[in-house]
Image (cartoon, rainbow, N blue to C red; front, side, top):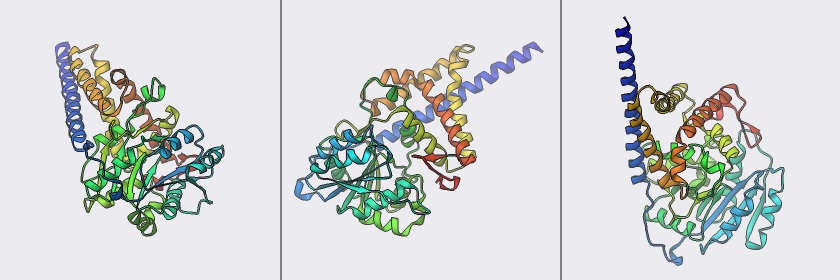
Length: 372
């Protein structure tokens, strides 16, 4: 009887080991494929005469911690045909004063309007910005997104080289020794690993779109009013005609972001459940994958062969961070078990809050029906 029990334990361990390694290999293959397809090419910048007009549009709400740094980077851009519009979406701090202080640099301030019924706050702010913009292209940025002087020129050059009508740029991390970096969430990892030309994803940090398409879709597609991921909804639409591109930033592009850990957690709780299409089945599958990747760190004490899975996961983390971080990649890879455990907890919280109807976005309640 004892022998049968021992054999059963060995068999279970071996099945778990094979399953975990299989998951790791699949993730590794998908990651390598995604970075190959999403790589930013080294194209030459277009002459100023060939560049279209661009409106940088930023919707801000309670952003005193990041507003000044963001706008300093934007107004320093070398793009020759640029307007900058910032809408203060009902901030309760000094965000509006900080925006207005850049008036001498050409930044146009828009006071946010009362939120109409049927709209999410940021979506309504972006629709107003789209109407106010005069550029042929609209470049939406989050306040915690930072650019270099040449970023907009290279983003536009890439978009035109692909004959696309919309691009979305996954930002890099270039900040220093902060908890916000070392304990970052897996928000952009999911975007990269789940990339598929047939089901495109976009990121809210930075996206560039033909203004005509944007205004038309806001006026015709009522679902955009309450979409938790406006950029992904538009990307899905444009991908049908091969007019959308997702790309990962690099040092040449110079687009990066700095976001406080607490804000990253808030964003993940808001997005993780909608990213699973409000499907409990998909949530359960994601939880299973996350827990399976944590198993080796426990089972390695009982079966040393699980070190193979741990090494594989370290390699995966290092490959990902080598594309996404400019500093502390090795340390970030070592912290992978914590990052995975944190993501599991955040996914559970996100699912619970949506199902309970207690989710909020910048202090505004969001109903379960908005999670798409």
